[in-house]
Length: 120
Image (cartoon, rainbow, N blue to C red):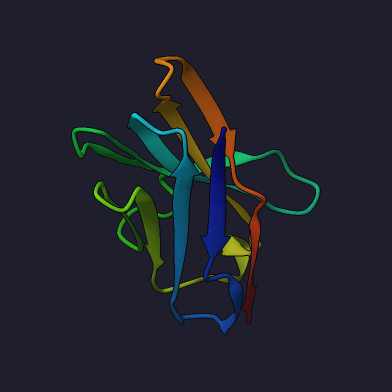
């Protein structure tokens, strides 16, 4: 199996910064896809940013220019640097990865979520 451990959420004032990290462990042969999603109260979960094994990134329009996703392939981690935070960024942020296990099967895994609260 594969486990994800997220860290870095918390309370920050508008205009501030936070850095989220997600570390994957377990039966991982390779990681094809890593990303961050978020879900605000009363809303559906939405994509924030993704990064492929080749390093290609994709961002939601609402976070472009403010958030940066990165990955450390050797450590099986994905990070989300969040700058110029706004109250509307308040949400539970979820790490999501797609891996190929040592058994050569594809597995999609979600983290437990970390709360980011941006005060005005």
